[in-house]
Length: 207
Length: 207
DNA sequence: ACAACAATGCCCAGAAAAGGGGATGTGGAA
DNA sequence: TTCCACATCCCCTTTTCTGGGCATTGTTGT
Image (cartoon, rainbow over all chains, first blue to last red; front, side):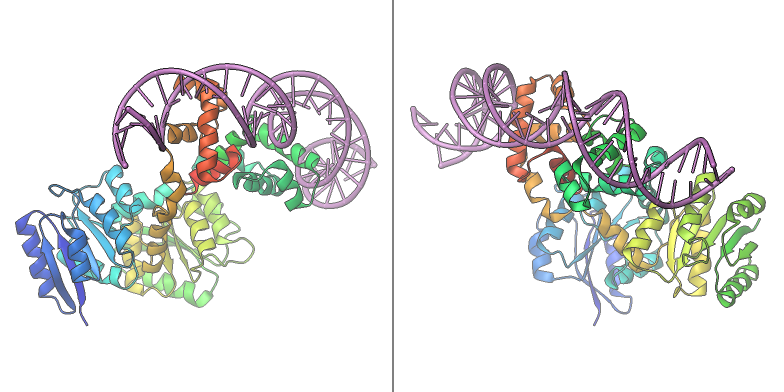
């Protein structure tokens, strides 16, 4: 069984090159190749590809919007973005919208094919510079500073508060009195330099 | 100039195999290879490697803790995790702690060397299954459900609250009366099925 | 042994938020 | 046109938080 690939790319030359590359590589097959994604949902429903290669800068409907629609209706179909854009906005919008991978167009044909296979096999290929930025976006801000000073108990309580618990609930869930909860929270406020639960939570969740 | 690699790996056989592999690959050099990271900071300071390969399950000091210390003192030095663990806890803890890449030990020698180079050149290599999980962690929850029902104004207010603002501050920043803020918040509570700011924020920030 | 810290508990006064009403104006959909 | 969602504003009561102070019990490091 070949991996069925569907292509959305408005540049005819690049689209045909991709089609050619996929069609003539063992183990791959082109389900369809289109220059816009106005009818993407219908096409995907009909062709049932394994992997979709999606450009972003498409006429009429932007590739990210198409991605959203496709992922909503066909969550099992993987979409690999293949575009020239490496600005944070479009990269992270794509990923948040459900892209399975993100390749820049400068990627070599061999690597593109490898990436398609990687997607099919459960991976998430990214161009190195993209991967690095994704990674960095997940790094804890070094300015964790204040948070690090919290004791275990304080962290535990802050965590409960961040899940929406009230003082009462925290008290009963931790098995301590509400007054003690208050004392811990006071210390948390001092250490984080804040004056309310919401501020503390905000620092905690967005560190 | 070769890429200077430092290795932390407690299994002697694997450590030596890595050392051998690196030392005898063109363009790479071993700065040092150690079985524990008690003196990691000192060693890193002395040897000034370009890339560090770090195991997690080390005696005395856990590799993630070492990673934290190293990244704190030497933010410019990249650390590539190389471990058997693929559980979410350790993977995401490592990444949040500042890992530049994350490879599973089953990775082929060739791919390991490629990954080191990739790190050196500004990438962030990950084993496919890891990359996929990182990707998924960044996907927008499709079950945004309740959040989607909020109007623009409500979302704006919730966003301000999530940054730790009080009712008063929200009122003055949006230019509306505090009573109106309250009304919006009441609606938000209804729509999100919550009864406090903290709960609402929690739903908002962790969607 | 003592200092420093963590965790536990309590009281009081005042501020802030929640829960329950009711009211007005605007603009779009049925 | 009528209805409804949205945004705006006000009042009253009860509950919850905040800020300040104070005390006891362990543990840890010097």
